[in-house]
Length: 510
Image 1 (cartoon, rainbow, N blue to C red):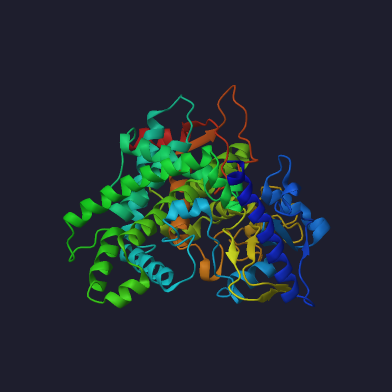
Image 2 (cartoon, rainbow, N blue to C red):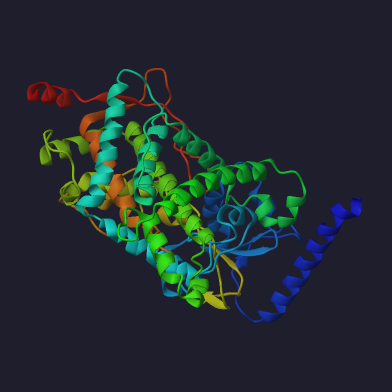
């Protein structure tokens, strides 16, 4: 039986050597990026030994290999992009050429083999689904009163929970996640959850299982044949995805049973309506892939990615405001002077609160929620700058490097919202081409506008009422973070106290 275990290894070695020889002959005479030393089968993986996180490791490797270099991720030829000029070329100028996505074991499990938006190739189905999401979001009017009401309602609910937990240190992460989850649930399913709801607790559990195990360049994604062996992370992922699918299927089947084509309440209604309209055009329906699987995976994408990314940015924001109480105080002084304590923040205030906006942007810069963007695939032989990039190469944009380039961001490890303000304290829209928190071009984040609205409204509502600090006896939040599908801050406790000026104003008002 031993040959059953050895055979895949032998085949992998042979295939790796064959592909390298064929690629070398085809690209002979071209200038390829300098490659980190690689061994047969494992490629350059020995360079990743130790505890350093990959985005920081790749950032440091620039000193030896240049801003653009190659890295053999096992048998996969991967190009690491560390500067904004090359990133813009990949994402925007040659966005279609580099629009592919690699199929991996974990993402195939997550997306039913690429039937979503984030991890699928740039196909007619992908374009149709993305366009459908855009048009459906416009149903709520991005930036209009309708969407603003949804977010403000959840911001108020979050503030009420924190008010009820005065004088008790709290882990804000579940509450922030619940608030963002309810915004997405309203948009996707026209439903929301109260604190402690069993279904919400189940969602938290399976979502953590997915976040901890998917798209982390784990060995099974690099060497798919490792699926033959017991794999704890893979089992956790499969179980978590099964729970997620059970939840989505219930929502979907319930909605199909009472679907009203004349009333669009949420994204699910939009998808069901589009699906019904295509049923009489079998050819086009097949081309765009509007099957039940595609609808469910696209909803899962919007829901999952929208919750995890935005709630993570809010966690980082709270962590940094605890570290820098003077910045927190300055935001509150700005809000007191501009909005006061009797009015609630609205989207109209975004242009009037430049320091708060600058602080949000500085958090997005210094701790990019996805420090390594989802890899792209070269759909044909092409180039980045002066270097030849072969068809099939994986391209990884190291957003961490781009946001920590000391030439563009002096003293880049310093938290300084002033980077985004001019001498008069007004917001600078584009202080540097190196600011790409939502990506760019063909694959730009579909939820960018929604995320910006959520971050502004949630943080302005919170900071108008509360002062955030570290509880007595607790350490300051760790700012290193834990690398995964997103860069998560480690758990930390917060003392959320109603501001004295807020309490006085409430007493006077009553």
